[in-house]
Amino acid sequence: MIIAIDGPAASGKGTIARRLAAHYRLAHLDTGLLYRATAASLLQADKGLGDVAAAVAAARGLGLVEFDEEQLRGAGMGEAASVVAAMPEVRAALIQAQRDFASRPRGAVLDGRDIGTVICPNADVKIFVTASPAARAQRRALELMRRGEKIDYASVLADIARRDARDAERADAPMRAAGDALTLDTTRLDIDASLARAIAIVESRVIT
Ligand code: DC
Image (cartoon, rainbow, N blue to C red; front, top):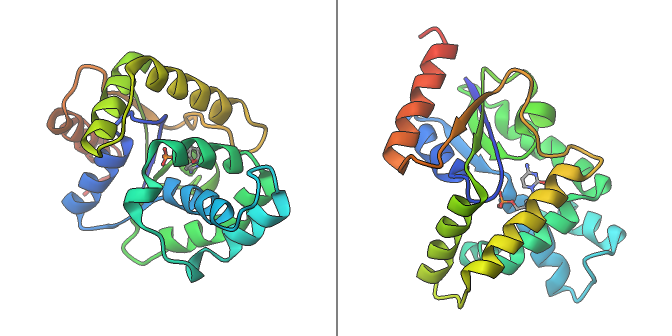
């Protein structure tokens, strides 16, 4: 069974994907980490974020480099990832690895922005996870504070709006719900309630 989870930053999609994978004992790939690692590798090599050739080389060489997940999940890296993710050449370099991951015999859960539309258009279940920008900014601010980063709510909200716009308006594989995706709005749901809804969606789509 392949489960595709898409949605904007801090919608809860990553946690839902991880917990769905544990529930169904499936492998899980957070595809945002691929773009974050590409951006981190570019910055480590002192290249500008606009350097397409260097970004493609970084994306292709990802398996060779070790990254600290804590560093990748920092606020600045999400923004940098969104910039390199708008380059069609970078996306092309990362497609096959994602499809290979999804094609393991028991299936997998993948989360990102284009899983249901581009990476796994034939996924058994597609969920588009969303929440209001204010709710997402609150969650992201809390998460960054726990991580020890200095933040202010207004700039977190502005960052989220900017990233949403870039991810949704790029020409190649923009963030959007696939036509056959079900939307899960987590604005008023905690993680347990969100997971319960996600499981209900999976059960409604898959004959077990
Ligand atoms: O899910 P995330 O916040 O870790 O993703 C970071 C950035 O990577 C996001 O702003 C856009 C990009 N991304 C993408 O374009 N396609 C994906 N499948 C996953 C992430």
